Amino acid sequence: MHNSNASLAVGKDKPIQKVLAALEAAGCNPQPTQDGQWMALCPAHDDHKPSLSIGEGDYGRALIHCFAGCLNKDVVAALALKLADLYPPASRRGVPKRLRQGPKPAPTPEAAVADLIRKWGQPSVRYPYRDARGKLVAVVFRWNVDGEKQIRPVRRARGGWLPGMPEEPRPLYRLPEVLEADVVHVVEGEKCADALAALGRVATTSIGGSNAARKSDWEPLRGKRVVIWPDNDEAGRAYGQVVARLCHDAGAAEVRIANLAAVWPGCPEKGDVADLLAKDKTKGKRYTLKLLKRAAAEAPPWEGPQPGEAESAAPPWRPFPVDVLPEPFRGFVQQVAESNDGCDPSYVAVPLLTLIAGCIGNRREVEIKADRREPAVIWSVVIGSSGTAKSPALKAVAQLLDPIEQEWHKQYRQALARWQQSQGSSRKSR
Ligand SMILES: [Zn+2]
Image 1 (cartoon, rainbow, N blue to C red):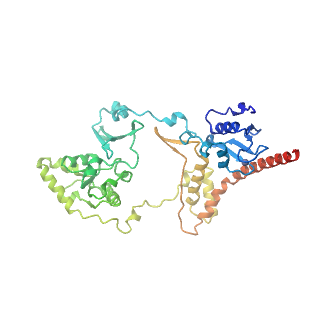
Image 2: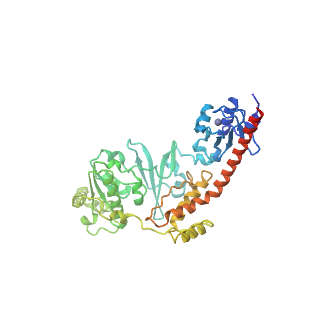
Image 3: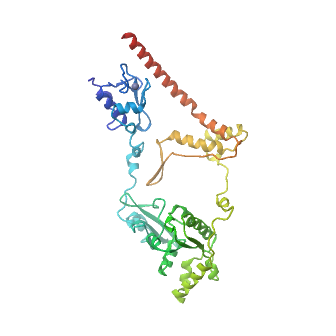
């Protein structure tokens, strides 16, 4: 067999190396070309002059093309490879090893916040979050630092503990008890849940503050009777509405929103269940339970979202912030919007962001936190009334790639012509 091992020295476990080695083994004699690629006899058809081009694409992907028209799947099958062999493992595409690994997990939840313990001392409270089987999956630590509340969650990850929220959907607080209960009280914050639990009630809350309720898994409340205890302020009432909706959608048998202020004359702004318990300590557990029972009984069943509520719950429409785009994109968006009867700039900017992200591909990632990276993947949908110039705007964006596509197509046609020429001379010489 012809020895072209020198040309195969392109990295030990790269897909292109695998393909070249398979071609070599199949007697297809891959040879380097002037333009940094390889040509070989195609194993999928009766080939006498090399018809198969082999090259390397983005992220170490192997590119193959039979000019005689064989399908790639037939070519790889003839080499006893799979199409997947043309791609490097997904987790390794373009991401350096150091970044892939992220920070090393700590052996315990406390060790994951060791830096903060050195800075702030021992946390004042530690709230455990467990999965349905009772396994500890997250811990929320709380410190009081110069009168200010500092909260840091840690989560089980990669065989240890890392700072950050548990994966979504996140478990509810005291989940194993919630699963066993018929009636579940939902409050804002672990402190209130613990206060109700101390009274023998099953109480829960969502991790991550009142704005993150949607990120928790409310499915465990299916079939249960739920009483929600909002804090006595606007944010609390908003949380109560969101949670009521989530419990309702999860299939709770009944959802009520209690009004603490109704049974607690003089309930302060931001007052919550824990405050009531602390205040009524002197009057005893029985008295407090009676108050809470009354509040729960007086709360009317939540009837589901009122007509029009869904719309008002959506954030208001805001114009696309074209000015945050760098040039040349800002000018492009403005120009296209103007030349399309002044269509909304978002019709241009949104698909443009998706197109730019596609061009970046996996070459770059944004490191949001020490252990979290996001590739440039943007899915976008443009919604607008018909006749408002959505399509012309989209077309103007898509056309940005035309010169590149034309250039690549030109290169392809040239390579094809070279191949056809070689086939012709082969016929003549035969
Ligand atoms: Zn072929």
